[in-house]
Length: 78
Image (cartoon, rainbow, N blue to C red; front, side, top):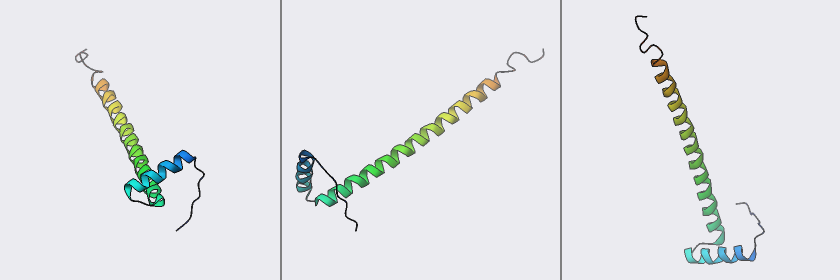
């Protein structure tokens, strides 16, 4: 396993120790879990953004088809 060193404020370090103690985790395990959860949230946010973009594209395409369908409305027989 690799070792990572960070600089942290006294307040951050205090909060880290307190939370780790409350959860009965080592500080390292708490940080690993926090980073993994953040990674998952970012992946979910990216997927959601992609799905919203795809839905918007489909919606716009559908609107264009609806407009195309109206091009000859009322013009038949002229």
